[in-house]
Length: 144
Image (cartoon, rainbow, N blue to C red; front, side):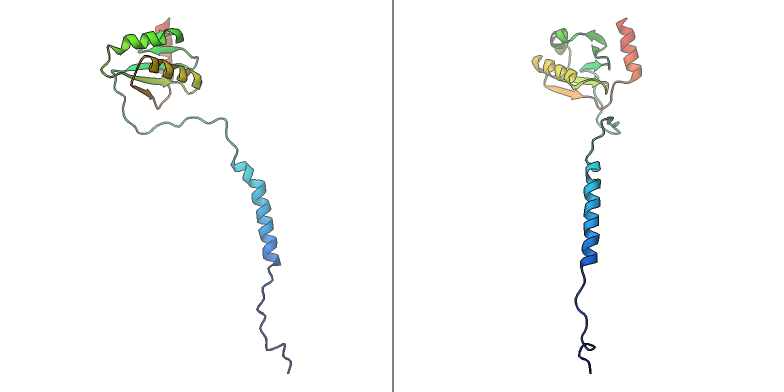
């Protein structure tokens, strides 16, 4: 009898498996950089829940053109600290609420933060929604 017929084949040929893994690796290397791209047109999501803002606070509204209004009164950057100091005495809590359009540059928000710090306000709140178009038109009409 032939001794080869009685033995079982116990080895696995891993060459096809290696080929499949190499192809998958190449595909992932080609596709992976597309997952890391950042979309420059990101819009800030709307907030569905949160705490309501009390009304007796200094509210600074900033339009997309960069115009600032404190409690409905137009103000310039150089008068911001003085106006915040004047308003501070009439408030129950020394807090500033910043309500800005989504197109406002962050440097404008930093200017407001620095002014609030100079005026010794204890808390600064950035509103979770941008200034609505209706509010922008009302403030622009009040300016005229």
